[in-house]
Image (cartoon, rainbow, N blue to C red):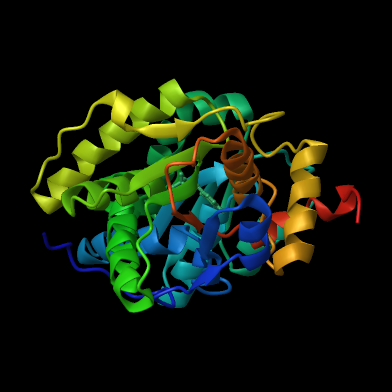
Length: 328
Ligand SMILES: *Cc1c(COP(=O)(O)O)cnc(C)c1O
């Protein structure tokens, strides 16, 4: 199966490292794939998705990228960075308040020159697509051709970035002489999970792909992933047949809600930083890895030998949490 052409933004392949002391503590083998190190301004998992989506935008002669997300969206910041790098425009529709602190990703969005429209949570939930369409027609009056990316670039084209990442993992398995039989990622809009799942299924490995949802619930994401798998196949030309029960979402780690932290999650992030020198983010990877460790303790991973956790990034999300640091 061949993937469509993509533009190169990310530093690839990203490293796979073993978490020695955590593995020893839990009596299993845990590795981490450093997709947090795909770059600096353009870092994290969204870069891999943008490599495919932005190629499509350029192929369609677009000179503006429109996308949406929370005010601290990593995806929005990566889109702003990519646009600046290409010398094209970015217009971000962000869920947030006018008096929001200008920090973290939101600060970087402004620094990278993106135009920003802040909308309420209700507008975001009910009409973000319409709002982006309106911006698109306004831009067209200014003489621009805009390309709309959905939340998290989680559509068929964006998810291809993680089909490619799965290929990369399979190549690295050969180099390292390790077979990963469980691959774990945070799930926020589903594209990362869907891409990994699709390619893993096509390659017919016996690895299980697990997602830890950081918002909504397993039922919601199983449907999202099934939809994305169909969309991916429109680009690859190869449909796969999957049941809802085949999608492994480890629900129960949303905690207080999206982008809200529980003390035990923050404590875990601090513990891992000291134990392994790895900084997770509070919104996605902190919750997901906390969930993974809890599930290992419960025995969910007893049947697996080598677990690979994808560090999907989010480092700039710390800025607006630093004020609320607990424990040390
Ligand atoms: C967006 C994001 C995720 C979730 O990936 P999806 O493809 O949206 O499910 C995980 N980690 C980080 C740091 C992210 O920014």
